[in-house]
Image (cartoon, rainbow, N blue to C red; front, side):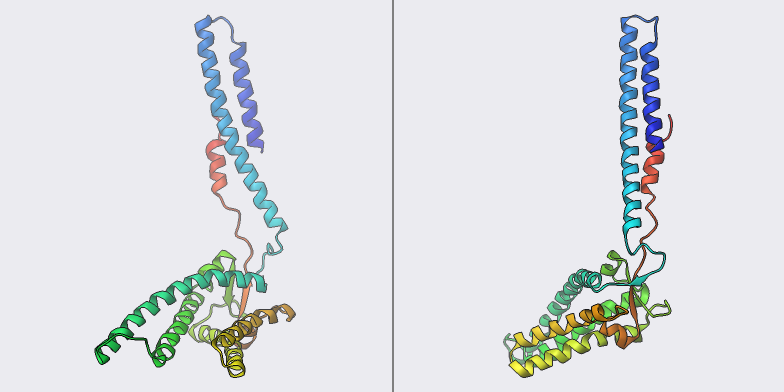
Amino acid sequence: MCELISSIRIHNALVAQLDRASGYELEGREFESLRARQIRKATQTRCFFVLIACILQTTETLCMSSSPSASPRPVIASPSIRLAALVYDGLLVLALMVLVGTILVILGTSHQTSVTGQAGKLSEAYRYGVIFPAFVLVTWWFYGLFWKRTGQTLGMQTWRLKTMRPDGGLLNWRLSILRCACACLLPVVCALMGYFLQRTPIAMLTSFILGFLFNYVFAVVNHRRLAVHDLLSGTVTVRLPPRPPSQWWLRIQAKFGAKH
């Protein structure tokens, strides 16, 4: 803001100095007026960018001061934030499933054609014994790879989430697989119960989704805000404090706020 005030003062002083200049003819005044206009445009541009930088700095400071997660230490992530990150990652996992599913369907159809001489519907044994386990493995591989390397998937990076051990260390493959298995335990139990009660795929799918959501609903009533798979696997998902203010606005201020 001081740079902005200084820029305005320099602009007014230069224009006033040109306007008070005496001893030149009409052509000279036209030349000086043109010079004044050039200085005015340059100074206005400079003031504009300095003002934008000041607004961005003030907004970022207010957001950091008003955010409850702006503490210097990580806090246990809330269920809503974790579900939002899960939606982001779900799109990526879905794309991987489509790719893997397409390859497996082509391989299964080719094998069936070579055996029976004609292409047909894939058998239930192939769908549930090959394709479905492949989808599970792809999902576990996706999360395990990111948790082992950085503790953050792409969706978790967006929401500043990190999965780690209680001591702050990263997960290994054993803990990653254990966490994925614990996350699937309750949904699978609910899906089997729904299928045995109703004997329909829709009931099984609905029960699976309800069991999955209960993992996070449990975190709402838990005083430590831990989900079911957090407790069973001995891992936690925390929300990191905001990063330090970005420096790009400082570069803009240094470029357009320097005195001529």
